[in-house]
Image (cartoon, rainbow over all chains, first blue to last red):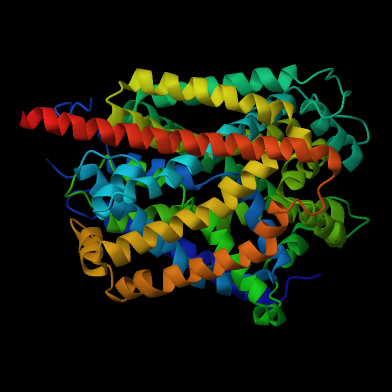
Length: 41
Length: 524
């Protein structure tokens, strides 16, 4: 069983989706005014 | 009874909270269950139903649970009975919440024992206790069974080693729970989660640099392992079982339907963000599962055993992969004792961040509804779980743990998730629920998710529940294919679960009765 072109495409697809999502979330958190803080009372 | 003047605990930081909830979700399944599921269900093509399920089931349920949790926290409720009671003004509501406590408590009882095996194996790895000259599957299976007390041999005359390590694991769990939300659970997450990521990255790098360990068998290569996971088999997409397997994997991996996310979210302030935090925890879990979990156990198994043997290992289940196959590989790797130590310690960190989350709903219930101090609540829970775990430890070979795992850790989850989705999106109201989730949000959730959460998520849950009911629950309930000698123990497990559920229902009844009495006294 060799890694096929489709296999590589799906591998890149799977990793891209999750890495992209994590990057989006933490970018939003870190660039947010609140940053690492939770809201005030 | 309930001291409403006492300040509720709070999370210290946002990253701490996200790591704690992600830690709750990231468990043994991310590293053992996911790669097996992917390889068995269409390889790369599995990612299509997997991401569809993530979008339609996983993310919506995350937001629903965060929403219910923070809303319940406004009313000083950190567990499902109180939360359901404020969502639905009906006497029945709080009793429906009993499922949330039952599931987390029951899973905690056996999960902590499984978690202790990972701690034990990390020690055995560094001390090379399972290392032999010619490791085989039979040999390693024998070692595991001897450690679990199922057989004797391999240096284990009884299960006292497993018992002592179980006690150590329990002590660590309850120490963390005793320290509280910020000083205990959050602190643990801030230490354990980065360690888990570092260990996983080290192991992934080792896997990628493995190439072909035996040059005489060029087909036994790590790249063929990745081919086994990622080469798509599109013909499988026609099979509804694959879509259900993907939905089931998403459901398990995010640790939804357990009542734990609610408990954590209840310690948020009303204006704290949950939209972005909920999405971030789901994303962190997915990263750990797809990128890290998918790059260790299965590729390395193919590199050492080949595709055909790995297929058999995968059929044997996640435990075989983790506790039988991986120890053989570590014995064949240079410095395998160190990689074995890292692998099992990684699993231990994944386990402990989940098990402490399972203890929190009951502790919150005792604190919020009975006015217990943290110390008293933790000690009560510790004493109760320690009594119950005895049966799991000593009756393991009779299927006691498996029975609990099916009803609480599999079927119960989908029942609870369906109940909470209906209560939040239909009884409480989709508009109010959606507004609640978006309140204080650092991102605005697209409005389409309101309709997904109202119609599609419960529909998927219903399909999964009916499917499991017909295919698994009924045969398991009727004890089909169960050997005669196991039957009394399986009934024992069922009776214990019924006692746990009955006790929770009784405590809910007492707590609310006391509240009513207090109200009457206040009026007087």
